[in-house]
Image 1 (tube, rainbow, N blue to C red):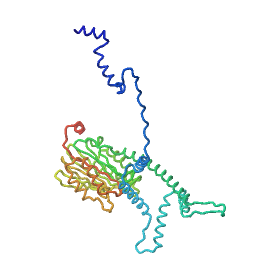
Image 2 (cartoon, helix red, strand yellow):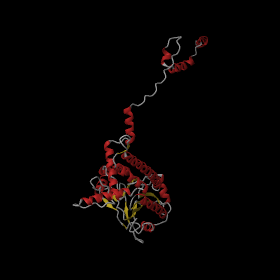
Image 3 (cartoon, rainbow, N blue to C red):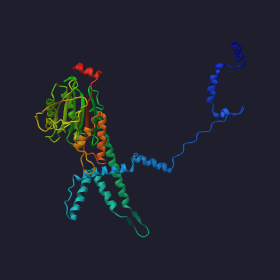
Image 4 (cartoon, rainbow, N blue to C red):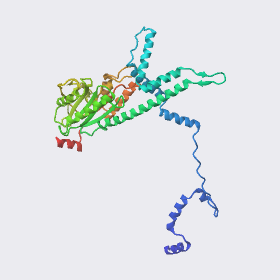
Length: 435
């Protein structure tokens, strides 16, 4: 019977193996082609309609989104207040405010101080343009000529154009400076770890927020392979000042720390060596550096540290007890030579260490109130069950909620270490082999 069916298929032009191909072609055919009657020519598909041009209101909406970058009106107002406050603080440093019950002449003198504080921050050529623009804006429209022919001079219009030209020139300078600072920021970020390292027995998290584009805070954590094998060195430092000068000194501190950490030394010896380098670049103690240095032994869980004038880190025990690590000496760069003391703490699983710079506790809200160490201690005591990363995120959220729209006036850096149970990992086996 199968042979007969094969002969029938052969004579009729039908082959069972062609059925799947026919079905695929049938499903791929356009609907119009499937429905046309036999002998009817195929109807070509209609050309796609051109995209509709956005209407006027959509263009206005797109323009507004591009200008505001999607910020709401409340966010724009908060940003304006923050920038206005920062600008006022910049100019008010050079202005002596009159005391109460001063004469109008004193207030006129105050306005003059503000004027010179602003104009002296421009180049001489831009100062001349600014004065010409102010003079033209203060002039009224003048008509010259007799009754038959009159020429109208609108000096206010030309004064506004001069101000627009000054704005364009200042924006160009600002963009150039911001680009250079951004490159400096990228170079600075090469000097610090971009992600927490994998260390045996430690859960590590850190973050930093510069007050300006570049910062004077420094943090690092790494294995001392060359000098003290298997031990973890951690450091958090804060250079006095902000912006570019502090960032340059931070780079010298990083180079000194990496160089001296390769030499076998204790914490007091390491701090003394860093102090020697810092005194050579501190301009007589003006540009000093506070630092917290610690060395952790994963095998014994001993933490040896010295505090060079830095904010005392807070150690939260698994039981909830808090301890400040403040043994040390003067900030680096104050006096040479300087002796530094050291102390040691035996850590246990569940203990958490918070190292921070003064930008955390001195962060102020719009009313001038500081975040304070007491609030930090309360948050740390309540977050003992969190991981290092989770606690750090909670701390940053609480700090943002407290400060609100107030401008950040100092660099913020935090490092959180949590002791965990050591598991048999390649990293732990490598530490054991080195020791």
